[in-house]
Amino acid sequence: MNKYKKIFGISFLFSLILFVVSKYYIDNNNLKKNHRVTIGYVHDYETLIKSGYNIYFYYHVEENKYSSESIIYDNPNIYLNKRYFVLFSPSNPKNCRILLNKEVPKNIKKVPPNGWEKIPE
Image 1 (tube, rainbow, N blue to C red):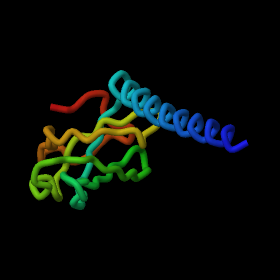
Image 2 (cartoon, rainbow, N blue to C red):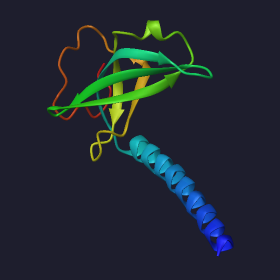
Image 3 (tube, rainbow, N blue to C red):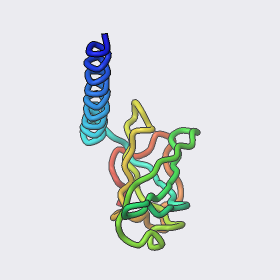
């Protein structure tokens, strides 16, 4: 009986890992193919145990506020309290990616409720 429990446990763990990896790639692919753009505000960071930092940012889609994080390896203070463009999935706004190489120009003040189709110039 213990042999079957071990096989079931290993199978379950393998299935769970496969599911998580598949979901990551599917979400990432969906974001590349179909996304909108909004503005994210970097408001905090924390040092990770091994290396790098987690930066925390929030953004709005319609009237909803979303929070997310991203791992970086350079000085987080250069991003703190600044605005960057964020790609998000229209069907699942929690699926997002902040573009830390695209700081928002100061002349852009307001975002359309559903974001832009592409990064504004």
